[in-house]
Amino acid sequence: MTAEKAEGATGFAGFDPKSVEPYIVKDPESLAINMARAAEQLGKAASAWLAPREAGEKTDSFAEPVSDMVKTLSKVSEYWLSDPRRTLEAQTHLLGSFFDMWSRTLQRMAGDALEDPASLQRNDKRFADEDWVKNPFFDFIRQAYFVTSDWAERMVKDAEGLDDHTRHKAAFYVRQIASALSPTNFITTNPQLYRETVASSGANLVKGMQMLAEDIAAGRGELRLRQTDTSKFAIGENIAITPGKVIAQNDVCQVLQYEASTETVLKRPLLICPPWINKFYVLDLNPEKSFIKWAVDQGQTVFVISWVNPDERHASKDWEAYAREGIGFALDIIEQATGEREVNSIGYCVGGTLLAATLALHAAEGDDRIRSATLFTTQVDFTHAGDLKVFVDDDQIRHIEANMSATGYLEGSKMASAFNMLRASELIWPYFVNNYLKGQDPLPFDLLYWNSDSTRMPAANHSFYLRNCYLENRLSRGEMVLAGRRVSLGDVKIPIYNLATKEDHIAPAKSVFLGSSSFGGKVTFVLSGSGHIAGVVNPPARSKYQYWTGGAPKGDIETWMGKAKETAGSWWPHWQGWVERLDKRRVPARKAGGPLNSIEEAPGSYVRVRA
Image (cartoon, rainbow, N blue to C red; front, side):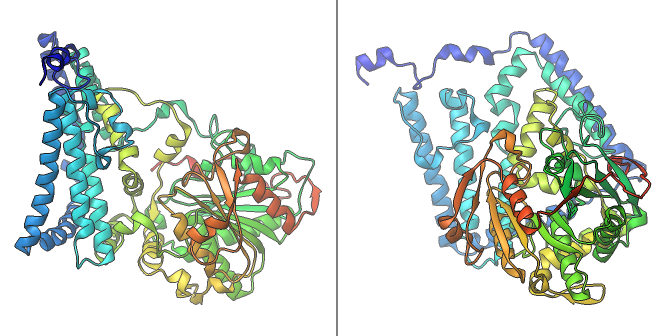
């Protein structure tokens, strides 16, 4: 090193030795006291977890998923360890990457300003704090994490002899492990957490462990990770407040009709079939975001199925029951309330899959009351169903069915956890860090309130769904049996508006696009920007995202996208135009319920039941 370079060097490029001061404990006595308090709160959390297990109220079922993960990853390990040459190749790749990283670190410590190689340059908001790069300790940890996680993913990708499902599961499990072991999740390896703990003398951990105990108690022995301040929301008061009536109900659902806001309305009423996984008010979060209110304001007479939050009484309710007692029941009620036999329909996610299957059943039975169907992020062909397929194989389904047989339903928390795991780095670990390590209360957010309002799944219904859709893909093959009939989507000749979202991790756009070819009639395929929720709940007033329209959904989605037209903003007006082109006749506005006596005000009582 030259004398000139030595004089100006600080030891690490961009690193000021004075910057270590925030990491030095200044009040060890207060820190010790708060660590003791945090340990006390952690003990309360442990007690909240143990109590229902000691009382026999809860049994753990995580052994089976862990066993499946070990079994899956062992197949990857077997490939690399069964041949000494492959073992050496794997070791050489990892050690070579670490050697390169160590070499760069030494150069930086010598004062050289080096950028990360392209393989380590990430737009990862978990590592946004500047000390992840400026501080040599945290910079080394960051690089080591990226190098190791990339190596693990490569081991899965390059392992030969794995079937597609095993490789898919192995890649998913590696991502979950990598997300869990990220240095951002630990106090001593996260610069921001380290500084905050020192600055508050550990008071953040006292608050965090208190929140952990509260969340385990709220989950009755399971961690109910809080993602939002639920105290700021009340269904029917500041969320799900579009005026309407509950005009009918049975064991499976309530049927809601919303009050008209225009002098005339479209002659055909609109029936919305939402998913029973989560609740319908994702379409009615608040007046500014509400698709339901917007549709009403366009002159739609909107009816919505509000599914029951099932318990042991609903164990035998299968897809036929949901088709008959849900969609069929709602169609009967609409005719009684409006005098109209023909309706337009919407199905969202699994509600759309049920609607599609019901349409196939109706086609076989000659029931032509539904004259058009709009499908929001709906899969009918599960060939490309994404990461949720990781949870579906014979062994895992048998395990789920065994658990459901004891209660008659699947706990809502199980499905909620599965969905959160699809985006663990966004929906699990940031909240773990903010809540329990930083001790910060989450901000109020209506969408996350809805996301936390989980629902149970009836045993027969959920088993049918997993086996017929995810495992055996029977609906798209014309092999699904409903009401003793083999039903085919090819028999569905009515117009279909098939909406996919570009970044959907639950119903991937590729999967939705492929399903378009299953129907026997004309399908209008539309691709919206954003994901499974934001791509659907995108009111025009916000002018967010975009959507693509094009020709018939044939071939593959990449080819279709190459010719599609992009339009800025919400797809909602495009859909309204599509509906009106089918039938634009209007009649005087209808009163909710018509000749029927209303049972209660919308959103009704079924939606208020919490799992």
